[in-house]
Length: 91
Image (tube, rainbow, N blue to C red):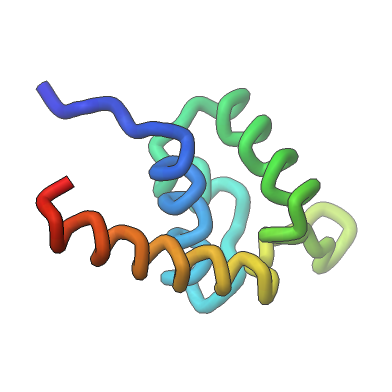
């Protein structure tokens, strides 16, 4: 059985999913890629929007997407550096 993801790994997975889709993603696609329940995803999205790591844009009246912000890109870059650093020491 695989290990459970911690909060930082879940945040990374959400932001990386947006990044991998070119910086914008539909909510349904994020739900599948983040591998979270709808309620848990909504909680994380609300937190990440509050911390300005992502935003939500409304395209038409019923269509909206999540967008990675500059701070979101910075988080991903720093997370990658931290991961490389910890991997160097086998942590």
